[in-house]
Amino acid sequence: MRLLFYILGIAFVLSTTSCATRVSVRPNQTKVITVAPKNHKVVIIKGKRYYYWNGKHYKKTTRGFVMVRV
Image (cartoon, rainbow, N blue to C red; front, top):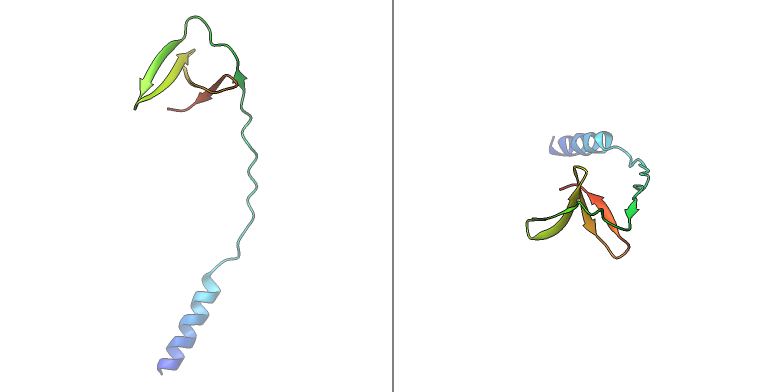
């Protein structure tokens, strides 16, 4: 009887697992702004410096400024 439960349990587990599917994700298109406008504000959030203008937050990188979600 115990063997029957083991066999039914293994069959149930194997029948409920699904095969892995491939999900392709396109990379984000990131625009780099080389120069910040004169009316930008420097904002510090959780110890990190962000630049704010036009209602969006930007982070400074070596290439310029990149928009981020805060």
